[in-house]
Image (tube, rainbow, N blue to C red; front, side, top):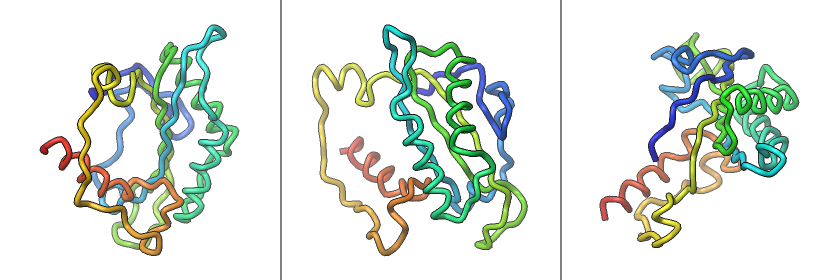
Length: 176
């Protein structure tokens, strides 16, 4: 699904314009996958936008960060408020919210001491399988790629690197 550009992203404690929300090419997370994230839905209701289980998602983000020894520089409450601010600032009624914490620049290598940065973006996103997929259904395929075993990585953390096998599986399914 194409990414719909919005106006603002919350990054490291402040609201910045979409174009300003950048990271350096030598960011640790880009080279080593040292990131954790959540995917949160916000739905339009008669009382305004409602973010689904916001606190639970932010608690899980913190737990994932803790597992990977990434000390978040914000509390769960601050992250919840930031997510609400992003939805309001972008005047979104129904959207997808992506909080992400990652190790920034500093050192290269496996010694993960780089400062932890946090960003929260939100953008319009319809049904996960698309309108056509909901109406007509989708084709499925059993992938040749499997999820890593639980003793290889802490699979109870929602970390960026954990999704590589899923990306391969999706590409394989689309090409089938």
